[in-house]
Image (cartoon, rainbow, N blue to C red; front, side):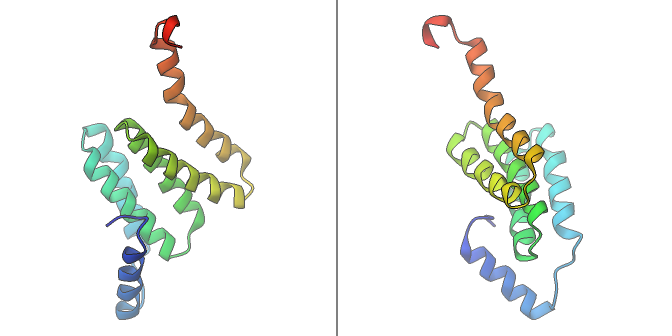
Length: 129
C-alpha cells in the first residue's frame, strides 16, 4: 500500500464502510514497527509500514499523526538516497505542521532536510563545494 495513492484511500474507505471503523491502534503499531525496523536494516519494511500508517491516519483524519509519519518517511527515503521522494514527504509534513502553526515542528523538518546536505558539504573537498 502506498500512502500517496488515491486508490489506496478508496480501499481503506471501502474497508471502513464494511467494518464500520478501523482499529485506532493499528496505524500507531505500524508506525512503531516502521521506527523499529529501520535501525535493523529493514528499510523496505520500514517504508511500507510507515506509508500504511500515513494512509490510515489520513483516512482517520489525524493530521498530526500524518505529519509525523510524513516526516519519518522523508527521513527513510533520504537514507535510501531517494531525495525526490524524501522532499515530497517532507513537504507533506511541512503542510500539516504549517496548518497547525507549529513552528518548532516546521523547523525540525527543515533541519531534517538540511542534515544530509550539511554532511555532504563537510565531506566534499573544497573544489567540489
